[in-house]
Length: 313
Image (cartoon, rainbow, N blue to C red):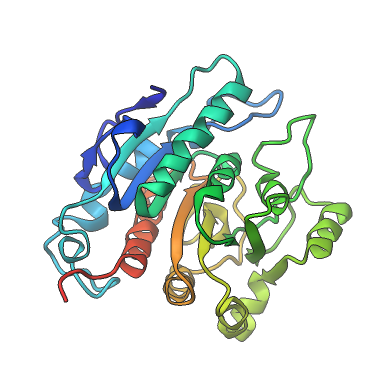
């Protein structure tokens, strides 16, 4: 199988790297380090090390699990009394990206089917493309919510159509994606006028970070009300560099952690949060205290707390 066990499991969950042996669990996580890379860029890139870097901070994320967590208003042991599953990292055979891409979708479909909440650790933002393909197995159409500095609507870059500039464009082509909301957009990225027009033609709702800072989240939350179930993709550069500094394209003026917390809880209430990914963390510059990796992991902990019912009541 193309799944490799992690050096340390997320929150010290049970590790099972055999998709055919996965039983249903409340929460599961999988690492997806690689996507289709662009010519002239390294493979693996820096973000490929992020799944292991985030897991390595488990002591800072939610341990011991019987201690009260004020973010989730409970203990992780109450929410997940039997723990969760860490499926390891999908590395592929590294021979033909098309074959690896197809196999990753098969594995991810199983990951989604066998967990109430399915989390994914990237990797650059290209890893979201097989994830949204795998959401086909969800019974109802999924509304995609993106937190990012960039809209990621490029059709291709140098002939590559499944790289980190294209995940939202690829999602827009899938019939099981019912709509797209993009939050925190700002600055300059890969988008040109034609990508902005493509997003508008599709009907994507774009909320700029500046509007959120000036007017708050109420318009965002009102727009999302009743549109679930949801899948959330979080690019680390969607948050302000003061919160998540270890990214390759830092842009000032991003969201704060508390913005993301409110969005997570709202998605869980408004039709259900089916899963999420966190991408674009660059561990080599996550100094001196790994705060970006810690923040990435805390977002997942907050999402589990919002999405998975407390079984103690």
